[in-house]
Amino acid sequence: MTIQLDLIQTVGLAVLVFMLGRWIKSKVELFQKYFIPAPVIGGLICSVLIFLGAKTNTFTIEMTNTLQDFFMNIFFTGTGFTCSFAVLKKSGKLGAKLAVGAVVFLVVQNLVGVGLSKVFGINPLLGIAMGSISMSGGVGSGASFGPTLEALGAEGGTTVGVAAATFGLLLGSITGGPVAERLIKKYNLKSTVTEETKEEKETHPLVQSTFFNSVLLVLLAAFIGSYISALLKLTGLSFPYYVGCLFGGALIRNIADMRGVDLRMYEIDVISNVSLNLFLSMALMSLNIMKLIDLAIPMIVILLTQAVVMMLWAYFVTFRTTGKDYDAAVMAAGHCGVGLGQTPNAVANMAAVIDRNGPAPTAWFVLPVVTVIFINIMNPIIITFFINLFS
Image 1 (cartoon, rainbow, N blue to C red):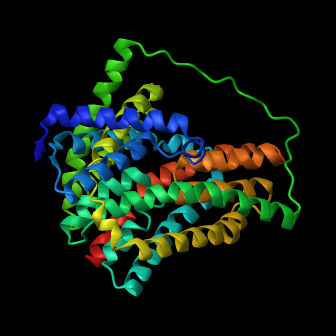
Image 2: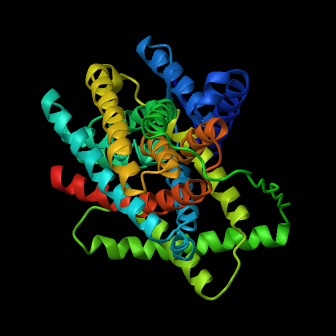
Image 3: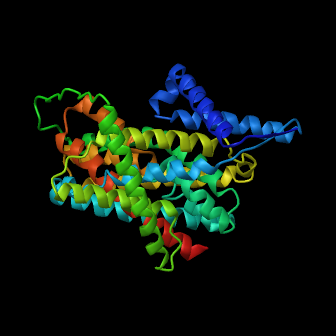
């Protein structure tokens, strides 16, 4: 039996998948601890059920994924709005050193992925999928670059990228703490702040008129990004469409900063997060699980190697280049989180160290800002370079 879903029905299924994942996450502490996204939980369950239906010849489902790319591009447009160079300047020389280290490590992750893929005799593009696409890029990046990899002959590129990114969320949360604790004990590091100043969490009620203006601004940035994407094609490199949207959002944000326009970033974050959750739900519920079976052992080895390399980099490079003090140790923990998982993993890693050893205000401000901006900007460029090099 073949079940065909039109556009509305496909989106409706994505909504149900997200709601299922959110409900399960609320009941399972492990998923909350390691920041596993709700659409990943629900999407993987749905894809497994669809796989079992096809494997047993019980049913198959054909979806209309027209809106999947739309939501993906809107998400990355919203992400571009976080790339504020005015904010970045506040991090000073420390931020510059951290940025260089984070960008160089993107290259290292891809070299590890490609190198080990050659050892196992698998497509090097799948090695890139298990490199900075999924590790530093996260689930959204894995799902976004997957179709590009598959179009170039890397079967299962999307499934591998998403699975690697999901595993990375776990790795990112369990590696940072041990690195920081080892550094703190070895060098007898202590917090220099005696009292932590706690800021009250701001609440921002959504207002229809201003929220609509934010929606229009994001759509305008995506429109500009579509032409940036066309210009990027002139370079001869194969940039994914969403890279232009990312730069479109960054362009609008920095123009606003220069003109002193205060954007309602919390509204743009809402638009971006809604788009991300719907995009991930649609992408994950249609994963081809079969593609993971043949790659199980190589994937485990490559991803565990990525975790070890990340820990060594944080210990020997991130810590040393950012001052070799207590804040540097906290940043090393944060880099493990964002280098293997996502920003929430980095923040959680730093928070865990801070709760036990005292405040680290410099690390708390610098690491999330610098890594988010530079990884968002440079990772797609570096990934594109590696894809073109090994395709």
